Amino acid sequence: MTLRQYLLALTFGTVAAIAAAIIVIVAIDPITASGFAFLALYITLGAACVGLFTILGTLYRVARNKTEDVGDAVARSLRQGAFLAILVLVALLLSSHGYLRIWTTLLLVALVTLVEFFFVMRKNG
Image (cartoon, rainbow, N blue to C red; front, side, top):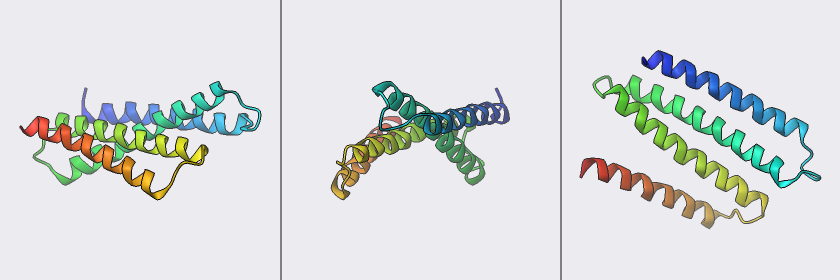
């Protein structure tokens, strides 16, 4: 699969996830919604965030570093896109329960940074 095919497939999936998230947001009343509705919202938003962050990261890496292996750039972008999506979803979840504060946000960012540092050191070490 070429980079162009990968990005087109990922873009199609991301657009579908964004459309599904919009449908969930518009169609569901948060006051009367069940846990399944919120689960559907978080899953669709998570898929949309992973796709969007991965596309942006891949395009940035490929444009910035012409000598880097495209497979490595895609793998790194996917991993970091998933981490950023988890960060966004956890922040939304904490916010919905009234627990999102500056210190919890800093702890989340520090945790994601440490996990990414672990992956980078494992590959280099």
